[in-house]
Length: 251
Image (cartoon, rainbow, N blue to C red; front, side, top):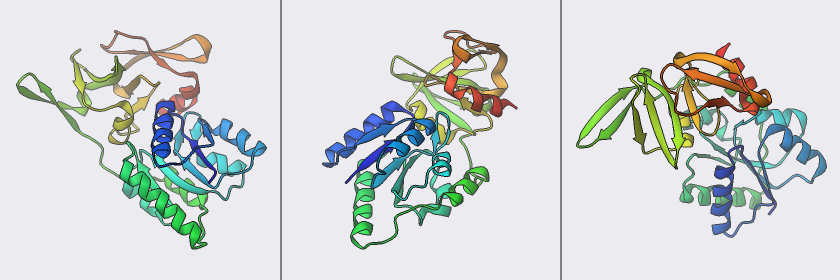
């Protein structure tokens, strides 16, 4: 079985690769962007199965299939919630919500093998995906976080959060009051919980609240630096591959 992973978060790609190896499945290639994937598909035989993240660093993954006609089977590995995916779930093998569960992954592989053995169609209609991503289904995002502070629980409303950031393998909330609180979630796990019109992931280390941005400054290597109202411990940089999406986000 010829398998590739398309995932812009390299730690997530490596974790999925290890999980597949534990199931006795070898991954042939790991790709990390739209443009890298297009270039690879032009030069190589298309795989039997693709593990596909929807939102890549340089765009949405359906852009790959606008450029290249691909008939590979797809298993989605995405932070989009299950209700948003129901519209095209029947046209795909399966979808795995991050963080991926071992049992869910094993079941998805079994489903793929069953469809192949029964000679059922395993290709995807990407027009349906594109329509869904342009007109996403309404959903509820997280409105507050509950943090344990000593023997007390502190409720932090989402409006009081300037940014989320990672440091020393921990994830922190920085509030408009200038306080920092450790939370038991990774930035990847936060993604489906945060309203995309309010929070943007500027890099691997930061999610910023649009209402907390004080200034935006041109930075080296075509990047941007963001000044927040109170957070000033580290430079908040928009990575070069995310600058275009960031500019669209604040427009």
